[in-house]
Amino acid sequence: MEKLKSLVPETLKRMIGESSADDLPRTCSSLGDFLLHFEPFHQMVRDLADPEVALCGKNKEAALESKQKGNKCFLSGDYANALDFYTQALIVAPMDAHEDRNLVATLYVNRASVLHKMGLLRECLRDCNRALQISSNYAKAWYRRGKANASMGNYKDTIRDLDVAKTLELTMGGKRQIESEMKIILDQQKSTSNPSIQQYENTSDILDEPHPTGLRCVATPEKGKGMASTGDLPQASLVHTEDPFSMIILKPCRETHCHYCLNELPADKVPCTSCSIPLYCSEKCCIRAGGKMSWDYPNNQRIHENLSADLEKYIAETTLNVDSETDTEHIPEHKHECKGVHWPAVLPSEIVLAGRVLVKSIIKRRGSTDIFNLREILDLSHHYSKTPPERKLELHIYSAVLSYCLQHSDDFELPINGFSISQVLSLSLSLSCMHTCRVRATPLVNYISKKQEG
Image 1: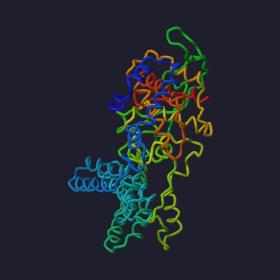
Image 2 (image 1 turned 90 degrees about the horizontal axis):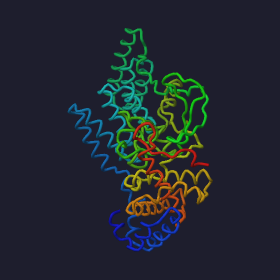
Image 3 (image 1 turned 120 degrees about the vertical axis):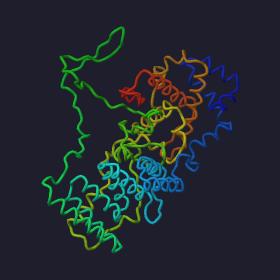
Image 4 (image 1 turned 90 degrees about the vertical axis):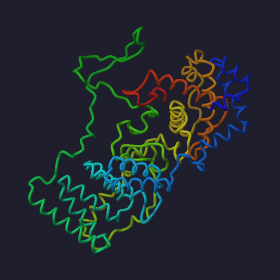
């Protein structure tokens, strides 16, 4: 980016540095005209946005290398590093890669084994389920799932898991081992009066409800507009909640927090299925961020003709994909950034967020690219005149880069002109201020509120 800034003509730099908010369509148009015929700029855009380059795409060789490192750590008892290597392998493993079976399914089972060793039983169970959603006839996944259920005292599911595993196991030695495990577990079941350990139940879905107290708008000279309660509030009450129109996780938190819900990532973090950038706390967050993905799994066929109806039903329930529960009207914010393109990883967070706001606004307006009128744009840019000249130039260039990157998206078309670039610039300028003064709860996320939707 510094090289590109240095190549902008001095007259254009001065024009941008001395510009006001009213000049934005003109200065953006002038920069756009310069960049239109400037080959180094277009080469940079291709590097950032061409799916064929895919610097943040999947890589089978890198996944296999991390898998081997994870195997070595597991065999030596270094479970923490084994967990990290298996997760790294999952991040870059293509969904359609195969060895003896689907590579991603194998990695989930390997990571489940580590999680079991570390005593993370819920996480182990979830990884087994993920493997089975990809390859429902994977005997090792059913066996590992049975062991996890046994450790949690869930003996009913344990027996069913091991029963399926025994049916799918091809070797006589493997079948005998599973039968031995089943005998031990049946003996354990008889000796305990508690068939399921309640402490492992997941209660994270319990949400606070807003306190039923009225709110009114107020304005004070010190704080400006705000809200006040019309009555007394008990301590620690949740008064009001509102979903942001759009949001993005900040770069320092990308490895530690979910890129969709912003909660802290669990040990069994879930990567995007089509690129190597975001991490999620669950498949649900992954799908809501990137949209439904359709994959054809050759190994996910009818398991066995001799299974009982009860086991057939159990298998269907266990391998049910979370896609079926997704809201069809929800707009995935990561979808236009996916397929391995590099720009969402390297551009500043407020620039990427401006792209999300722009795309979501156009989708909500059924493809109309006239997302804001000029008055609204200028309202967002009222502090532009106080911006240093160097920052003005950066915003102009970043906005042009983002506009061209968005134009490369298969699912999105954006006209490139002075007005469209000025829209992106105004959003970016406003969001860069929110970076420091308007953060939701913790320094995890930039967001723009719903007032921009109307």
